[in-house]
Image (cartoon, rainbow, N blue to C red):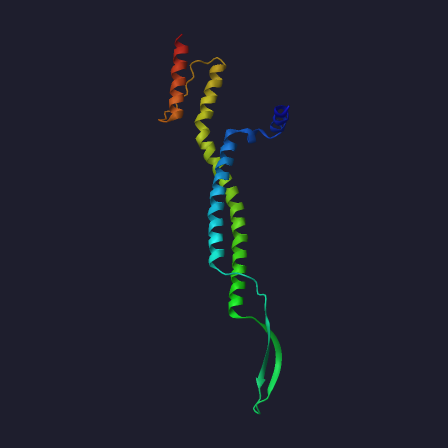
Length: 173
């Protein structure tokens, strides 16, 4: 029962989302996002612990004015002031908030960039498999003279050579 519901849900997704290429790209993006998120989060936490930050909570009223020649004081205006250390902590709090905002946007951008890069890299890595599949489909259609001939010295090259050897024996038979 659960399988049937899951199969229907997967069947309703576009075909490209069920491809190995998409899954590899998503895996690459997810892993990169987690690693970068941990690094950025660690940097943020280290900065937050190092830098004292809090909003300005206490302000004072000061009077700006001029002292007359006779020694009296004439008030021009009243201004709000705070201690320098309070201002520094408030600036640090604002800086940390900006860092948090920029880091989140950077992570979103990085996710999409890594998804695109992962898609391109997965396509390049899977190109030999598409070639092997195309050859297998041609052989299935009856053309036993087809060969994969990848000419690679890796696991896919070994697979292609094995398929070519098998096709040669079938063609000779």
